[in-house]
Length: 215
Ligand code: DX5
Ligand code: ZN
Image (tube, rainbow, N blue to C red):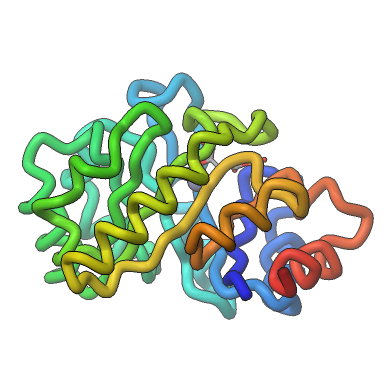
């Protein structure tokens, strides 16, 4: 059974507190927060003051997905705003090994995110150091996009790389996840499913989270 990480990007931002309290009451394992800088991705979303406010009422660990250029600049601010996991994009880090170890030294779990066109094998020399890998199943920047099916094969490849290396990394998937796309991801070895539109557009988001977590 997968863990579920609802993405607040799809929540009503005028009622963000209620969305966090809904996730608190649900069977979700994490709260996924999407930070965008308008450079690495075209969109601009949540920043540190908002993450801190979410952290004050959240009862689940915060999974912070940094869609920003050079995210190593923000390690201490991400930690101070209450993140448990800091996700940085492979494509946004020149010195990925240094960034990963600074995230760990700050007391957070370190995760690397790959865009849909970035091959899994590029993680070979860093996989043993990672707590999690996030595979994007859409191009980052927006919620509500169509799931890219090739991601399922990438999960299989990543599962093999993790097994061969002895890494303890978990596998998280983000983008277009719902009850139709999740089963193949889970069979291929995904551990954690991020879901935005699927959860927040559902008539009963708590039931929608439970349905995904029960697959
Ligand atoms: C997209 C974000 C996702 C987004 C997923 O760039 O990283 O977390 O919220 O939204 P859905 O589940 O609607 O595809
Ligand atoms: Zn995300």
